[in-house]
Length: 208
Image (cartoon, rainbow, N blue to C red; front, side):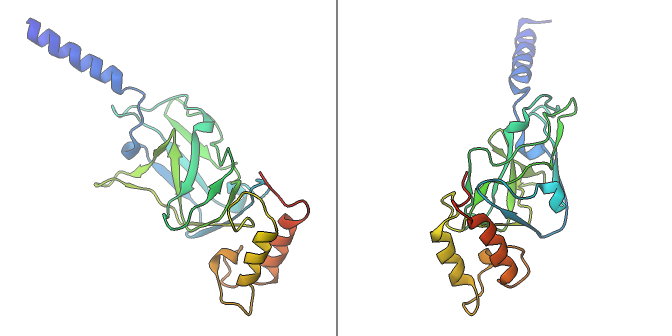
């Protein structure tokens, strides 16, 4: 083999090694199982139902730039973020996790987590190690699963307090309907939403 070919082969080997283990966000499929849209009620305390109890979950297959599955990504390196720039959820330090580290096929599931958040959102994007995962349909665009997240912490300051009560009051009839106060996504703000809010407002107010 000539020195030029040997040098080129060495470069390809080094490049392959360098790419190994680096997440390819556009070739790491996420499969969502559940209703569309889904409705999820959250609290900064994280004391609401987990995803699977609510009837939905995410399955991840994480591949590197070379197209190979990445084994051993820690379960804590998975989370979800608000995919709507207009509405921003506020997260407690650990917003979500996968159930397990990725296996030999680069796979894991997120179903047992609860969201400890404040605010209001109409969609979630899954994240792995800081990469917003994308649909592998050129041009690659971020996943945005239609999961409506509603929180008793309506102001998004990570505590359910008098400020949230005041805001909720402005959404309660006969005031105009606001979807962020409709905690069960039933199309109206009613006594059921008030009862749910009251539980999390109870002294000293649920917080992270």
